[in-house]
Length: 201
Image 1 (cartoon, rainbow, N blue to C red):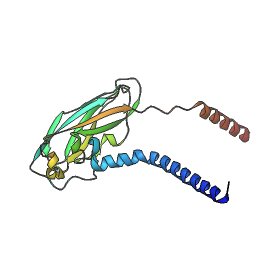
Image 2 (spheres, rainbow, N blue to C red):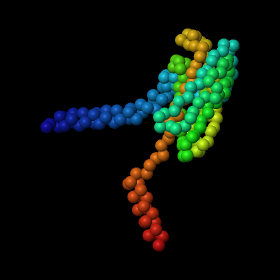
Image 3 (cartoon, rainbow, N blue to C red):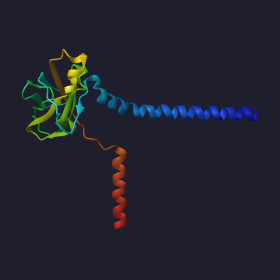
Image 4 (tube, rainbow, N blue to C red):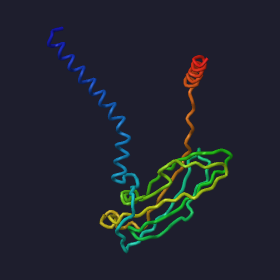
């Protein structure tokens, strides 16, 4: 192999390694980038988040319906306290969902959410919501979980949403499985404890 051929082969190898590394990096970045895209555009009915209420309230009214679901592994009973409310666009709304843990175990859950029609996701804005954090219910505990929201007045300027009179906010609760310690971690913990005991003595 000539010196020139060797240099070309080396450059090719470097390029291929760079491409492979880039593809791995893109794979790791794909999920957060997709999540960001959904939150910015409201794609797939993804709702928005704000720190304060809207300073514009229109005369146009809109009805918001509330839907509640649980995954097959979640034993909670979960439902909206009120199925619908009607408010003016831009007006702050407050709704409650009721969750009940009928089991004899403490269970922690987290809620996924979206709105329909999906095209209004970019206009449905939450100020505060139980879905922002994990929720833990003790055996037999029943709680009301609030969500504070408004429909962005910008929805009135979108020709694609002029016919929308009802928005449905849906939640699905999933249990959070406790992380199980692997056998290797258990052995390591025992070894570390034994070493400390020997050092102490």
